[in-house]
Length: 591
Image (cartoon, rainbow, N blue to C red; front, side):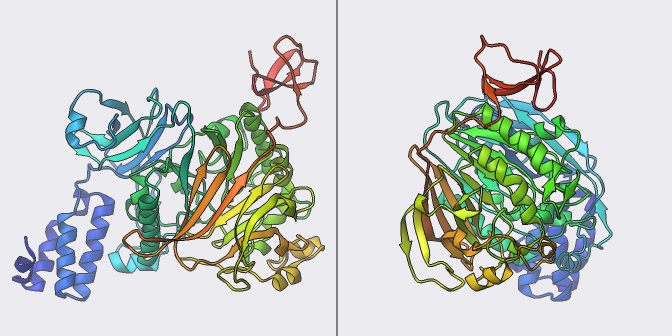
């Protein structure tokens, strides 16, 4: 039906015609977009709105079709890739198909060489769809109390060929998704790039459009990126009344340009927290940590690691610090200090030969905007800084603060900047919200401390940098005041901001390239809906010292016998001998 045909009809007739479209026949995402267009046309039956309604009618997808598809790194990125997607309740069939072709078409999936992996499916809880989001409630006419169940499908492809471009799709015969792409890690991986984006906070059309603009720009600017790290706050509304519609739009619209081009490396943010476990349903990352620990995070797959090239990535969540014994007054958390601390040391010992060590988390150990005076950071610093020091972490990629911040390298013993580790720093106009420090660029050596980085936000929600005077006024040594949301306990806090520090005022992303001699950061703002960008900062991270194995363990050769109660390392794994039996640090006996 062409536009002229639509306008030949009376608006009342066009709207009456919508009665033939039953919700049970279509996917939740496509039917909701149709409902939004229908409600808009009812309220204002203009030519444009009637045409939009017609377009949404033509885009309705049958109830069997898959949606919210994503690929995730899960284990060895040279030979494995994990997948996850949703279907409507009642659609239990599902598999992933892969072909070793960078730009496969549907015809390629009918030929030889197709890899097919069956998926496991789980029926979700009843997820509140609109939740408390007034925008979608009003726009669609769906009541806030409405809940939908979904089938979440997960599959893991193994024994893939290193250094190979794959095309993939999900679904089953007659009901296949769009075709997406990724490349496995090379067998001897050299230089590679990945994308950092964070804090989309999907809540309405404006936030969706900002995140999509950023994703389009990132996919166009860094087409060679191997993956995209995303440290949380995918959505705005957490809690029990959270909105699955926000998650749906993150996958189907906001980040879709990146999702179709590369795997996502996620972890959760505080706004993602919900007993409905939407996060767990939507991703398929390594769940080893949750399997090994009795007291575990709420979500599955938010603490995991992988090695890519010469870099170890430690992805973790501080969200659940309160699930085991903790104290704000004493700055202690069993989960952070003991469980995560042990996990960090084990993983770095197992991968001691990697040149670079990077972490990814949502919450901040250090930040320069409104979250700098939250009650959690003093506890996070007390519990996590000893671990970052022991594991010689080079770069900590953070989210949460929505401001562009280059911090350190930080001396973990006294929370001071290691100024001797910084060279080639450019001085520019500063003292304003765009760049409070007046620094750009720079080369930062992480031999003796960690560089902390926050790359602003890919969305619309923005915070602004605090001034030096404000940071000094917020300082206190009184531990009781650290819980009032107005104080922090870092003396001379502003001095830690050794590079660019400001609010870019636009959706932002960073291309991070791991090279032989450095890790290079190139940060951009997304300037329009065509993928145009502006480069706002370039900096380099270097490491001259070789990494060591975390201290506190003895490195034994295969010929040496351990002593009772002794922690030791063999083949880059940490063990302890107890009552004549050998255990790993997770307490599992090793035969």
